[in-house]
Length: 103
Ligand SMILES: [Ca+2]
Ligand SMILES: [Ca+2]
Image 1 (cartoon, rainbow, N blue to C red):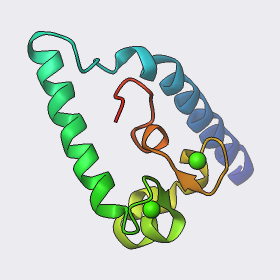
Image 2: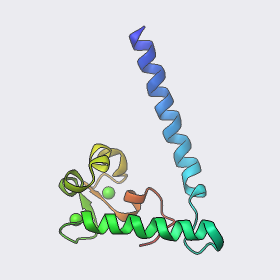
Image 3: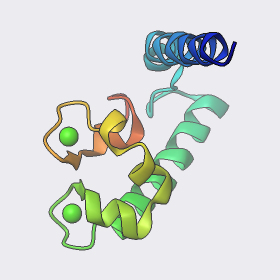
Image 4: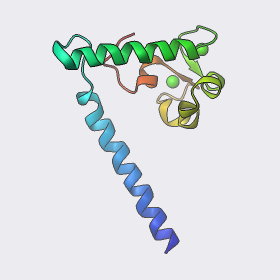
């Protein structure tokens, strides 16, 4: 029973993760959009960039595991998942999870 429930849960997580990747890219508003969606995107990007820069203690433009552990507990927890190319650092794109907001 326990195993079956665990499997269902894992599968659900997988499905959610996959659909988020598929939907994620197109749902994220671009920075040059006009109107409210663009405003939200620009504001959200500024906030995200502030956090990213604040966490990037050594200012090399990427977040190491120890920087994440120190400043971004959520990202530290999901580090391997977020680090798409597995280089041990979170790039700006890996940090925001898409490539629609160039730094
Ligand atoms: Ca860094
Ligand atoms: Ca990386």
